[in-house]
Amino acid sequence: MRRRRAGSVFTVGRRLSLPEDNPPTLIAVIDTEEEFDWSAPFNPAATSTANILNQPLAQAIFDRHGLVPTYVIDYPVAASAPARAVLGGIAATGRCEIGAHLHPWVNPPAGGPVDAFHSYPGNLEPGEERAKLAALTDCIAEGFGRRPDIYKAGRYGVGPATGRILADLGYRIDASVVPHTDFSPFEGPDFLHLPPAPFVTKEGVLALPLSVHFAGRLAEFGSVLFPHLASGWGRRLHLPGIAARLGLLERLWLSPEGHRLDDMMRQTRAALAQGERLFMLTYHSSSLLPGAAPYVRSLAERERFLGTLDRYLSFFLGACSGRAASLSGVAAILLEDGRERRG
Image (tube, rainbow, N blue to C red; front, side, top):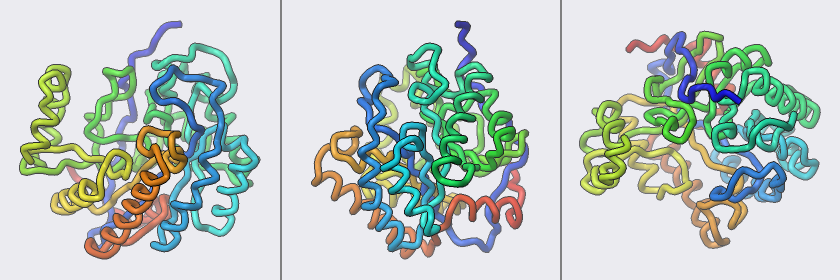
C-alpha cells in the first residue's frame, strides 16, 4: 500500500479567542479508551475496558469543582455495555459530554495493515478513515442516544482528509491539535505551523488545541527556539532537558500524566502571563486503573494522581480566578461572542 506523506494537517480559516472580559477558562478532555501495552505492537484483540469502571473517581472531583468534562470514547468503549452504563449515567445528568476518539486498529471495518504508521487515523486512505469514523459515530449514537459532534483523533492523528470527513459526518469541534509539537519523526502529524489558540478550519470545524505552553526565562521565544532544541540533533545532545534544568525553556502539557502539580501550576502561570485564557486539561482514562498506563502503576500512585487533579482545579478556580466550562459551552462563546484573533 502506498504511504501518504505524514505531517499534513488542518488548513486554518479564522483564528479565534475568548472575549476580553472572559475570565481564564478551563475545559477537560479525557481520552477514554481500552487498556493496552503502550510499549508493544498494536493489537486489535486488546479491547478490555475495565478502566472505565474507575472513571467515577475522577468524575467526583470534576463534580465538586463544577467542571463538565468531555469523554472522547473509542470503539471498544462505545461497544461495551458496562462502559456505556458508567458513562451514560454521567452524561444523562448533564455532568459530562461524550465525543469520539478513533483508534483505527480496534475500530471496524477491519482490514489493512496494523502498524505504527496506520495507527494515526489521518494516515489512512480517506475512504478507510471515513468508514471507521462513521462506524464509531453510529456506535456511539446507538449506545448513548445522541450523535457525537466532538472529535479527538487517536494519537492526535489528524491528516489532510480529516477536516472534510469531520464536517461531512456532522462534527463541530476537534480537540486533536497539539501545539508546538511535531510527530512526523514518528510518522504522525506536524502541528508546528498551526496556531496554539482556537481556530476554524477551512471546512468549518472549530479546532480547540491542547494546552501546551512554555515556561522559563525564554518562554516568550519558545515557539521559535523549541523546534531547534527538539530537533534530531537537539535531542541527541539532550538540549530540551538541559534548557529545562537551567530554567531557560521547558515545554509543558497541562496533564497530571508525567507532570507534577508544580509543573501544571508553572505552565498555567506562564501562559496567563503571555495572555492565554483558555486551558485544556487532558489525560487517558486508563491512568485510573493501576498498571494499565505508564503513569499510574499502583493504588498509591492513583491517589497521588487524583490528588494532583483535585489540587490543580482548586488552584485554577481559586488562585487564577478561573472558571470551569464544557467544550460545547466554550465553542458557543467562541463562535457567537468571541473575537477574531489577529496574528
